[in-house]
Length: 488
Length: 95
Image (cartoon, rainbow over all chains, first blue to last red; front, side, top):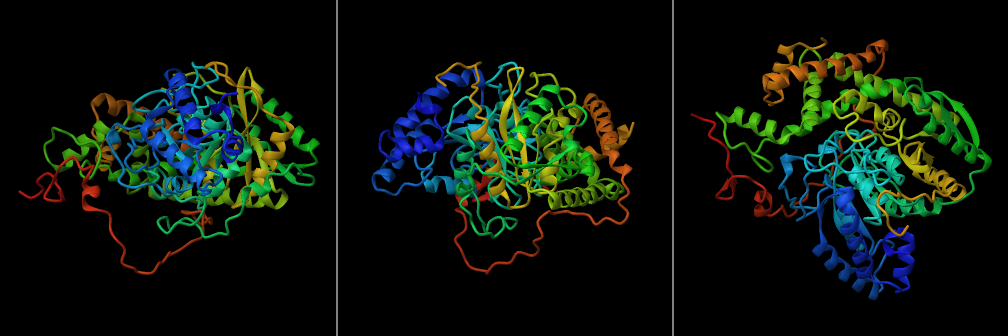
């Protein structure tokens, strides 16, 4: 058993007993990165020197008895989350050389605990995409099959955890960007309730939908990371003041009598037979554990995707107006006047999908179309929110597939934006309603991972973790990606 | 087409983006397809529905107005493509 293949809680036991040092753990991961990264391309930046220095500091902490659950644990951070002194590119030419002068609040919280940052992971440019093919720098491959995508936009973080390049990773989820790649790569990924985790330092895509969350190797680790990253932050006025629970206290196998809603809308058109069967078997597992399965309906959910593309693009067009070539980022060399400087700078700096969304968002917000598109989408958002509220009167959590398909081939959808957007059909409604959701691996279809999505009420992460943990214990997902080799 | 070529050119100007003729063609086709798709929302009667801009019911978050240290000037300027005398340097805007 190699150190890099262990979970956070397994590493924690070894570190606590002083059977291994943080430096040994870090070196094991750095070796692993060197071994698999040429095949996976999950990382934009590897911070080897910083990691080794942090590892020594973590060992000091442990020696002095100042350690916590995450001291000496290596992490990889999505490259749209600001890290002071470490390049944060958003996988965009626009920010190719951008070095943040400050840390995101989540990064600050992790560093305080003694976490070791190994590097920054690849994403679809500015988190816009579902395959990580929209990166300006590299295409990340799925560790289960190198000819397939890892999902996106946090594809680098998901692939890195599937390939054991770190013990855990952070991603961001605007319409499914944590859960969908977690599903396609066979790892655990959670999008917390909107407002649970500070967004300060997360490069903004769609501010009313974005949320940071963890990628981990199991459900226990998800609870451990969540414990550290949540909490009110005065630098993010949308982060909420709530009592901090200990999420590990929800890791129980008992789900007797729990009401689990299954919505027929999550098994609709476009779902692969293998995905459907695997998820239905998972529902059976939960039923056998004593949960009550209740048929529910979320009729407006089919309108979530079109509403999402209006809202997210509108917010993006506004958020990305800041890239003007003056304070940071790319600037044009040749231009006629100030306006032309903006135009040339932005046209050179942004990739196609980002431009497409800025265009759609600008159109939806423009004079004459605002009511027809943007306001209409916000009204549909109300209907979807009400739909979930009604559904949660009948059940405690809602389950279904995370993605309608397993990982698709690289290039397969790259030239068809609409086909790509459909990858998020089961995840976007959760962002629209601000709810928490997790994806956990529940089996294989044609040798590729299938994800089970569990959705909860606002701030009911505990119940989600309870169900996820019970399922995980009853239905151990022991399959490992074979495309990269290794000791697991 | 749900959106015309001249509308695409107009929106590009609003968004401060510049496109070649070929790109304008491509965007007209692609955006039309996307707009046709999102027009699905028109199937719904939302006459009496309130819009939800933000899912969390928080309004006017206030804090005490306390003096705190600002970020170091050099740090703020460290990513600027052009700077001079501790300021961001911009192209000439007044003739």
